Length: 191
Image 1: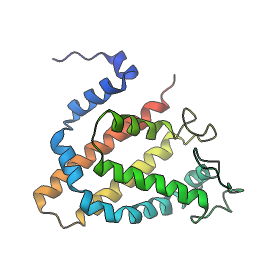
Image 2: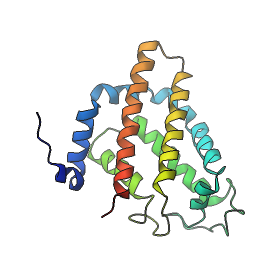
Image 3: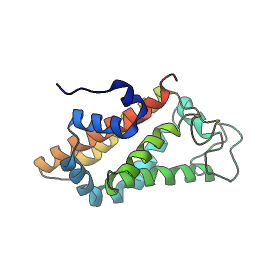
């Protein structure tokens, strides 16, 4: 039986990620499958981004989080939830971030830089990083991750991959999204 330092899981990001990847069996073959999907998924990123924002804008509980100023955005902010539209400059700014995130998932090496990036994705949705006004409840993050997961699965099924490649790609993305989910939820734990 392998001994795990549970306190270190909470304090050492690399140790935590190493444990999770080993436990889930996320390895080089999964990364190859994810990167192998890049040429198929990259052209679909704008469609995926629009689908995510259509969903986020269809609920007050998720749309309201786009009213406060977003970290790094310097332009005009919307006055309220009702005046916020998807063509608002700040939403375009956020869509670009999501597009870069989805592209990074399928193109970047899974090294320390990527691990830190995935961790910040979780942290930035809390007051712990980015805008102190932004505090997206965990239930909304879980809803979003579930939607993104289903959208990716649906997209992968539609790529026309042979069954072995399709299965490998689906399993790899499933593990990756569970890893991302852990790196989101860890920032919601009480200090």
